[in-house]
Image (cartoon, rainbow, N blue to C red; front, side, top):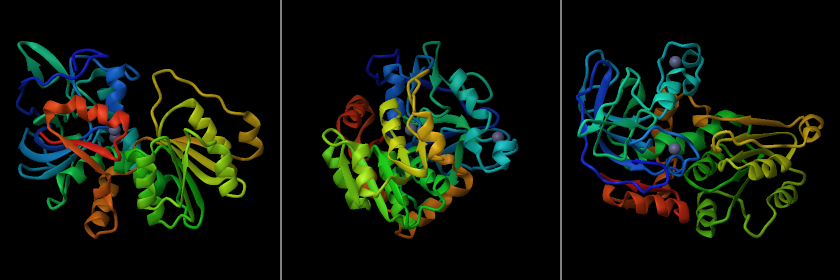
Length: 359
Ligand SMILES: [Zn+2]
Ligand SMILES: [Zn+2]
């Protein structure tokens, strides 16, 4: 991406050798996520030129000095939040909050400084330390997790953002969901992953809203008990009606003030809304104070599914391998890198699950 607002361009770049603490990964599959779109439209800021893509998986080809967590030949998931493993956040099971994550956001460089991508002397930047819309990526070893080589790369790729975000939010943020009610706003890759998790733990009602009929149909296939077409139905009124007074939990996967508020107003007293959709930089929301206080309701955010990725990601992949998670149903159309713009357009206009770029 050369600048905000312009389409992606397919270019041949020079990729430096992995330095100390770094690994080179041959990318086998990359999911297209709305966060990539946010960077393209300017809702989120990044230094340009930059290679997008933060949901990928591949094979380690080469490791630099000091790398001990992976070896050449390992299949890995790339994480868009690196973890140091020794800070308070990492040690208490919330590595998504590790300070290392800020480095990528602030510099669009790798953790040890600088970028490994260039063309004709111009340095290109890394998105979230990953940049997986590419044949290869050099990343910090803190950004990769080795996984079971038998897991298909497309599944491993979507695990790195959509699945861990959606499933993690349910499993970590709604620990008593069994027998209770949850409403999920937005049936994209994250929302559908949340449906899978809610069904897995035995939620009594799984209510899903979206404005794309095919996404709602997919949600029903995956376990939604009710769906709401919010282009024609009032989400809050429908949830209050279906749940006899409000949902125990709401997950908002869009990141818009109006849908966050609609979700909050659909909570029963004591309920919790978890927001996982990213807003535009500086965007704010308002909610009625007394609905919050008098109803003892909670409004919280969750980054990366609040998940302990090094532990939880292999757990979820074990469940997939055991046939317990229908993650294949989250894979939408495949595109070559040369059709990245078409894949992004597809995501924006009606993809069901994740469009996948296959280098
Ligand atoms: Zn993402
Ligand atoms: Zn840390």
